[in-house]
Image (cartoon, rainbow, N blue to C red; front, side, top):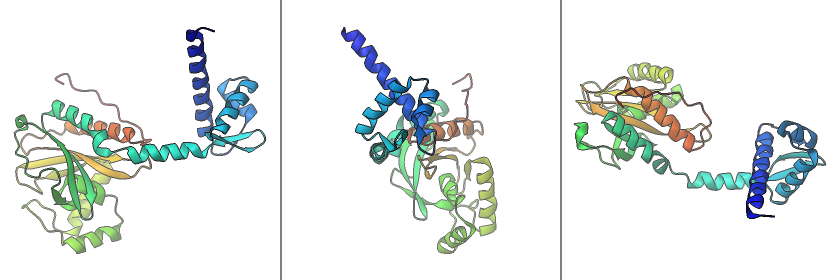
Length: 266
């Protein structure tokens, strides 16, 4: 048998393994051999042979004679992959592209207690805005677009507790300083899936943020665009949300990506 023939055969076996794994993943309960063969269009003897090899590797479990389900080895491998995923590493290239397309500062922030912390930033001199908060800098949740994403997921009691702890102290005349005002703002965030900072943290600077989610659907970070107040454009929100969704997918999120067609000038 030639090397090319061996190679094609090996690829074919791998493709059939993936067919079986995908089919098992689509069923919450153990699946019978005959059903697996039917759904994958494999001969029962071929499916049985491949399943036996996967059982030996613990990729598949045989629960009863002729019944199969995904194996614990997949969970072990999945946990390893998840542990090695880093939201900063997953975001960098996407952030650079978003910065190139908008010409504005792009921030990656995570929540830490009652504040957000900036963990990465993509910017250049042409953004026309001085970066005040460096990587590692912090800001109150209610004064930032990313912070509002996190607050929008809080229960009414948790939000009230946050307001009691922080006293909703403001930094500018535009800062939200009362619980009713903050609640109204968060209702908009929940409806739109996008949060904004209208010169609430710094005068002259406006921001918009979209959430980044992990494989369990948990909000783990915010991606934001910061720009001089007179330059920010509402149309950026579409690419911002699309970019945040693509980062989320890279981290295992199973949601649907909203299509985005870049304007001609991009």
